[in-house]
Image 1 (cartoon, chains in turn purple, orange):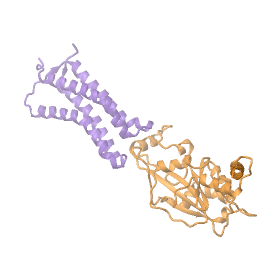
Image 2 (cartoon, chains in turn yellow, purple):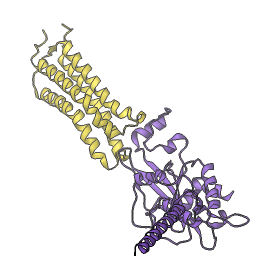
Image 3 (tube, chains in turn blue, orange):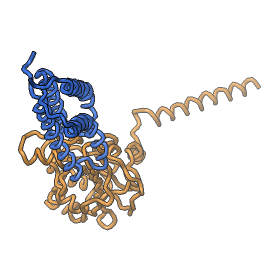
Image 4 (tube, chains in turn green, yellow):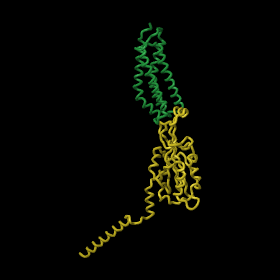
Length: 147
Length: 245
């Protein structure tokens, strides 16, 4: 059993990771689109990018909104293992998403083709990451208040 | 009656033998070939360049003063030699030849060019795909990350003929232009090379076919009209300098 952690702290860390990296990648795709990096196939790039990060970001936003609406002020504690599993899987997933952009200049594979190909490994990884995040949030909701 | 039939049969045998002898002498290796027939045969064996030529991105008529011999009669092989030397001096080592009405066409291998029309340096000049970063620099990396790796490609076709021509409406693809190199002859046939180049009637036209690839995910398409004029292409390729020597 890992050391218990504050649910609020864990949520903030996960949100920060997803929002910072997500925003960074979002800005990159926006700049690429504005500079015509994808030519007339800009839609293909967004069709790949949005489903890659939006489902998880939506989940996190949903949890944060529920927290804000909630009047409960007690500090809950959650098992550290679940948090670190969700955090590490999220970090690995986001790094691999970012690699798709940053490694392309060193390859001969066109960026859109690399995006398409990356679905092979990003799909299962996204499933695992979402599952671990879901497990963490469910556990966090049912956690006992701090004694 | 019998004697007459025998005589007719003997005549038939003699005629048959004679005609076979004539046939053997006509087609046999021992008989020297008629030179004009040989030339005509050679010409028909030469692959023909699409005529009228497909629509080009840019054209330029090279002044005859740059390609005629300083002394004596200029033949098409002299013109070819002059163009070939200029091409070789600037890295165009692969060419192919086609027949055109009363002349010939010389096609260069497709090359990748910079946006200003100069030939790309190094091996990337002959590469068709977008090249990855070979040496890391932050500027080059950011450029590759944010800007589309546009590609510009060029094929130059020299057409030497006394016959005025226009261009057809056909727009060729890069693949078709690439096939020209392998479908043409490796050298100018003697039958065409022997023809006299009259500066009064002959012209040497350079047709530039320029292709542009907007991103590495797109197929290159021909640019009509091209970004640059024909003379600019030839100058930036170094060919005009070679012809002026």
